[in-house]
Image 1 (cartoon, helix red, strand yellow):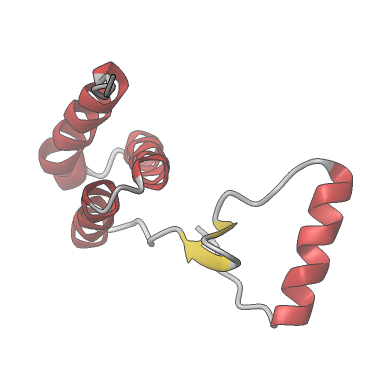
Image 2 (image 1 turned 180 degrees about the vertical axis):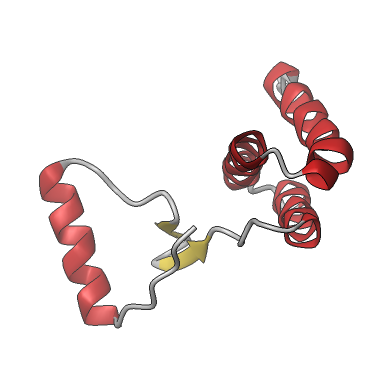
Length: 110
């Protein structure tokens, strides 16, 4: 995954161009009044485990969509690289949590 640091002015220009084209960069998503979230790095088993922990923390903090986005990107990364340790130890946890989140129905208050 390529990470690029940009200045605030350049970032605003990129957002403007993306809105004109009708697309956006899922790695850098403006949220919470203009804050930018950066997708964690993937690669080694330790980096992938850290990314999983970030996703879980996001979900526990109520940012379920962001946590799911991280989990989905992590799943895709592990599938594409077939890194053995991540495939054995992290991928099952990622798949289980994604399954739980897609079947979860929040309680409604009446």
